[in-house]
Image (cartoon, rainbow, N blue to C red; front, side, top):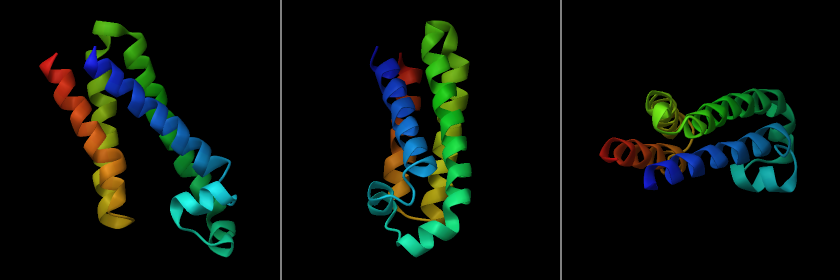
Length: 116
């Protein structure tokens, strides 16, 4: 139950990231969330929308795994690993806080999933 709740929350988090990157990137909420300036956001809006779409795929996979219930173990594991790798890469290349926003929750999800 705990692992399913964590996976579900990570899926919802990635829907939120999708919204920020695809629709709010150059709006006040997006500018605050990513520490961007309006000028920088205008130049990178298409790239951010692309990132947002990928986050949507991660969310879809995690929610699909939850929908499958116990049969979704492999799906949840795969998508949590994807989130973990993306979080580590983002933390190393873009912002250290991404490790705490994506990689740490994914690691917790993987741990609880494997303890269940």
